[in-house]
Image (tube, rainbow, N blue to C red):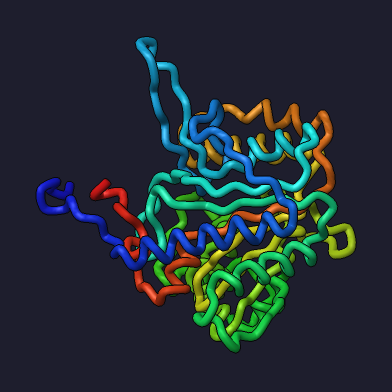
Length: 326
């Protein structure tokens, strides 16, 4: 625990705070030019996310200690707006995720999220690149534009096909970087692939480039549609620059029954891992049942992008107060 009298000053300089403000204004101008509406949804929500890799913060309010959660993304609320006819929307907000603190992580961080009705995954990648290049400015001058499928990235960086590689080989590579499975028996394939992207493949991407990693395995679709043209893959991408993951985008799943099935699979895995029991977000599912328009959406880590723009080494350099001194 930090001592308050020793850690009262902000970690970001006045100059960096001015740069942050300028990039936020530039972001809003970018969307205003494209007639994308800015929205503002609650940070306190009634349902946590089911994803086993994301920890929702719990808040208790009032004399009866009614339980709420701090949102980890405005995604569910924004999809409810989309289902009611909002059209193209974006949001800049603070989100909170437990168990995340590192050079690139702070439990509370700024997320830029937007949704484009009728956009394909390719169109959204183009727009993400246009915004990222504009915000990064000189920091990405001369950078290449690169699009790699998930398979192509694994073949290039690890000389294996992630869709067909033997499970033992994946586990052997993972153990070489210190992996120890929390499961009895063989480790889940999806867990091994996620680790290899986070620890090996991802940090090698975007060197002198803006690299989009796309067409993830169907097991990592989350809230994305599956690609009917490429069986076993999901219409999902991530953006990397200098080994840093900046954005995660989907061709959004609109099928309420399929989304419920995925939520239930998450809950089963949470029970297996002995994680806290939670309830699925029925409001989101009701919105999907009412009719979510065909759309593509993306979440971009604003603090990380600012880090790259100013050449900072750690996220606290671009924050007023990291969590330990907040």
